[in-house]
Image 1 (cartoon, rainbow, N blue to C red):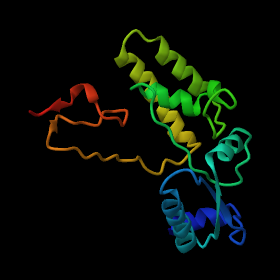
Image 2: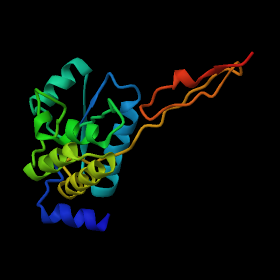
Image 3: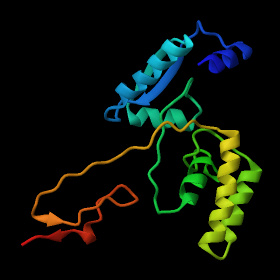
Length: 180
């Protein structure tokens, strides 16, 4: 905390002005963890906060139009199992709104070039190396602060077995077996 407070002081951060923490009211359970983040800011850094909530139908256009006036909640579930799906969709210049989901409005030609290189590699292994370099650059620039990854849970009856949640957070129905 000492280092964080020192950095805020060096940046002449105004601790009298509340930070607005944005989240979608359509997101189940969001209030509790957004409040927890606000409480941590207030307790540890003496930064007051205000909660800003909108239904998803109003939240999304505000993201598209750079209308957020403070940190906001965003998320992504992969369309297909590749790191590229996260990197380009969330941080590629081509994914800037209104064309995509790059709501932090990150744009770095070197990052985009590494994605292009990965896409042109002949094997998954070589592509992954290029994507990892892009990821390293992204971590250096840090346009967004990752907070957590959701964990899904599922229950099932004793009448089925081999129930697994796959990489895309869905039950792998093709693998489920009915017990006779």
